[in-house]
Image (cartoon, rainbow, N blue to C red; front, side, top):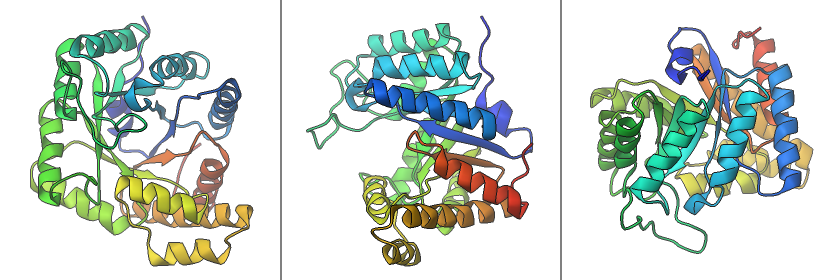
Length: 300
């Protein structure tokens, strides 16, 4: 079996790396879109690795597995397949982990997961995992060869009792066997730098990959910010509001802002960027092309 490279092999070499996130399609048309995007990104961007999410309640489990396989075999990407605790027993989770490994995957993003549609509170399966650190341990015990990623929240998880407790919970995930952290999206770099500093202060030493999303509109920025506990800076809101109603101009304003974020991160020594692209190539390509022109992103 030819297995993917571990993600930490990509991000541990000292050079700049880039990754993007896909979501499993729910329709055939959406499936064609994700494959079109994958082809464009492979040709023009060539990300070092990609990730693919896992629907609430396991609602896209089969499609996650299907498209993880396609991204890997048809386009040659190293793939980070997401897995959540929601709706699955420990035996079912172990089975999924083994299926991922048998498919040649070497990387998993372990998440507690959001409640299924129509529910507001997370309720673990009676014989499942209640927290992401439990899922990390289950993966590590089931298939020790996996490189395991976990999520970090630069501005604190919306359901955390305090920022301090949120960091303690993150350290539990790392101590359980996580190899790297990918942050939820943020629009203000100061939150990322502060987050990394706090993580290091409590002994979290694994790589912390910043997650950026070029906002397509003010509504999207506010909606995703609320969902992930990320504030939308007044200046970004002003820029998007100034071109409200002009989709192309709003998209460009979002790309410009994300480019400013990425440029600062790279200039301050952050060598890995993760882009949330909503299965579309335009914003990622626009951002990367501009960063290359500025000379801060050095890729072939």
